[in-house]
Length: 388
Image (cartoon, rainbow, N blue to C red; front, side):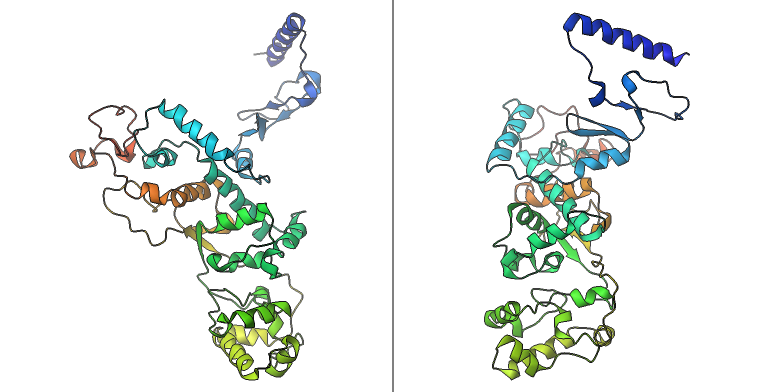
């Protein structure tokens, strides 16, 4: 087959269409995707100096093509929608899907097809997944041109001076006042996940950056005092590195800390320093007593699961948190994060929804995975999750 003949026929068709419609192809804004096992020498030459792309194309804002191209659909989306806009669009999407017949709670539609839903996009959950992907890049990618700007904006939260450290703190205790809309929404999306550090605080360069407030890894009783916490923050003391002398001569003395903070109670500060040391392992304490090196601190690895609030799965209910499985946040893909956001955001609506009524009758031998594409009419009862 002469591939250039096909290209010539395409070009002739475009010229005919152009003559009839007075429209022209803007080759500078056009793209061509080479699909299949082609080599660069086999591919036919294209008109208008158009070049072949083997990765993917962007069509109407959607990336199509290879897995690498599709992943771009989950990259950073910066602007927040005006209040109420996403909810109104979502309402119209559901109304269009149901054609006015709302048999079930809309949240059921948002579940993946293999879990009894229809895979209809939940816009708020999609935005939350975008924010989580932005946080993922900020925490674990080192080649970001906007990293320093992001850190500067995050430090405005609650006048605490923290940036990446905010993602290690108890989310419910965070003061987000002063933070811009984008990073406020990112930290609110972070609350949909439960993050854990299986190895705890390790003796690495990051330990100097470990925050000492609202940190599950460093439970302290003395800093429950708002006055003490505020005094330390106003003095710029908010991480472990601020409590150690940089030359490796040991921990800062309570008397010096009193002079820096203006706190008169030396006993309170001694208790505070003692609690900090006791919360750390012996290896970490010894590491902090060494001179600080020049190694760049790498953000600790976090394993994330859905923040389900202790929800207990019962037999016969549609909602399940068994998938997606727990994974490192550094490696979590956008689709998995989106599914978690859908389930957590709609937990209350989905909690009482039952599986299809045929599950027990068929004993799992047929229609596995809730793929019920024909049962849209009676005898399917209302408020059951059999939409496939």
